[in-house]
Image 1: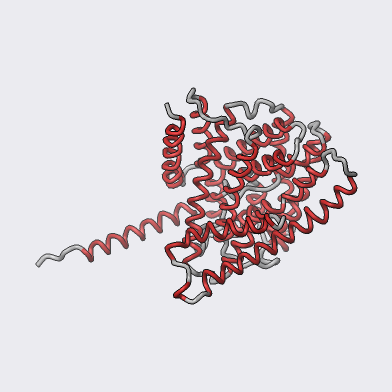
Image 2: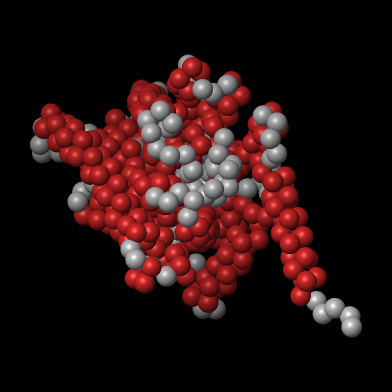
Length: 442
């Protein structure tokens, strides 16, 4: 049997499923990522001779695959946020990133080092890996399509946080690299980290993203009509925004993740009601799902091929601590001043609960492996894999019922009810058009 043809069949079935399953599962407490992890585990359990899904052995491939998935997701995330940027309007996502994430990294590192026995550099790397929430697997708790109006406080906070923290967790990964033994002194390494990895790279990411967004906005919207980009090519422009913003910023040694998200919200701010944003978002959403299919199948395969074999009770405890103690308690404490956050208790509770981990965590760990030899790397992958798997299962099952409960608590229709209403209206319009076009009797 040809392995290539077998892979094509598996991918074809998986892509068909990702196009079909979301609409089928939208009323049930089950997310499609759970099923794709299961599909990967099933396929790799069979003696089919598929290539190894080991993320340590194939760290460069894992890095680039997850990298592409995250930057495409960040573009779509920025494009679908309707709320214009200002420090006051975005105060809740900024609190979650600048306060909660930093405190969570510090707290988790201490626990992993002192109580779980990880070495300081490995403990910090694991903390930075598990700190950011994921823009890829958190679609059920994020805002809707551009201009759709589904942008309540909770969905906006979780979407903005997922967009920002994937770039702002990077300095802590570099700090973990700086803590590894080296010929240079620790003080020199920390000084280099402070000005280069913290100040310069963050600044370059912000400036590069803003500049890319402004330039691309001009090319898309402000050129004369005769030389403006063809509307049929809007999807390709979406990919261009992603790759240009990321690639140029990375060449300038800035944080590309941060640049991509800022470029997309800068682009979104230009002619906010233009139909381009919806078409661009649709393209990135489909491309993102294609990457998700591949990554989750490989993740399921890695699970049955021994990814969790080095997992200890202490490692599993660290993952559960990050998901169900550190994030919820830290989130409630960060947002407790309701006068600043303008959030009521149920909203703060939901935001604090849904710290979904996913593809971004895989990227950070694979990236670090390509840069240096970390001790206990197999154990770090086992803890990360266990944490992401637990998050996919638990948060995937809770997302739909919790968000429906929150919508009803606020007295607004749920996402499913709105989708059913839109579907009914579309069917009625189609029926009216077909009635008008049908030949009338003489």
